[in-house]
Image (cartoon, rainbow, N blue to C red; front, side):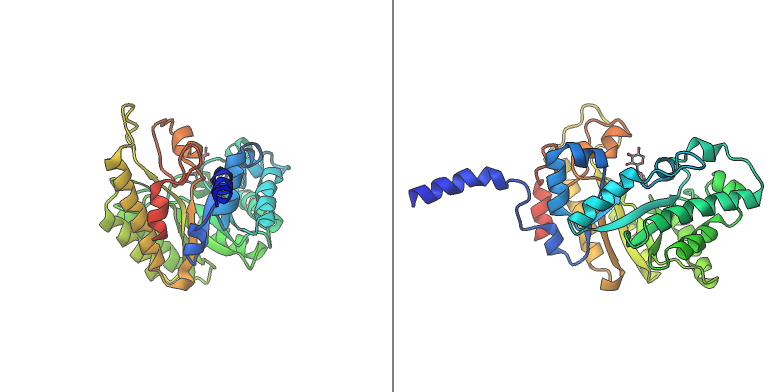
Length: 336
Ligand code: XIL
């Protein structure tokens, strides 16, 4: 008996990461994370948690225009492929992100000049080369990302400026290249921005009326603890009413959105964040089964979050895993 206890004690630290029960088993829809191939290769804890916790994977950056298409006549799929290989070797689904966006555009595209036909050929070639490369390996694509401003107007970008009706064309081109892929329009910040939300709903109606394939809506869900529950729920309900697949595609819940340098992640902040995570999961679970494409977190642990790096917010803790890749208490709340 004594020696059995001793063995158990010894064994305990070895199973600290990757021990069940798991969220991915608790929920009937895919639970995903966006991943960074460098961290996968270099950080053992990251690799372990990514392997054991998730059933879906998105490339945080490495399928974006700037990374896969660095020069007009050169594609580089190496890093994106690493993510796909990781997913395949660990039996995970891959979600493609993203074919068309106004950000992370390579210099040569920003400097491109030509008439409408030349612009269309350029974008079509990009979309179709990438979608064909990953055909059969990704379940779906964020075809177009973040096309509308808060006031519901089309965002000024090289795409809206140079290609009339570029959203519809992009969906059509993506569908031609990979007819089995589930095609999403993906955007952020619809809560509290009814005009932006309406523009997205209008887009869906317009594409459907013209028989242009759109199958899903990605709600990025980069939210924070001050987000209004009614506004989040209203966005989810309006999205649900389209009947399309719904992906919470980039979930993180910021606790220090104003980047207060004296911020402390105390009980109050933790509790507020837990309530939001619970609301997000509960409302997702309430969607009809056939609309549940999954919930994807935007990276794995707090220390990997773009809110720390991109927004230079050192005191930010937006995810389920802390800086040591340990599950936070909210993890068990979501299990129950
Ligand atoms: C972010 C990445 O997380 C960062 O590493 C990168 O520097 C900028 O892009 N909406 C999106 C994502 O659709 O692609 C963005 O990802 C976050 C906002």
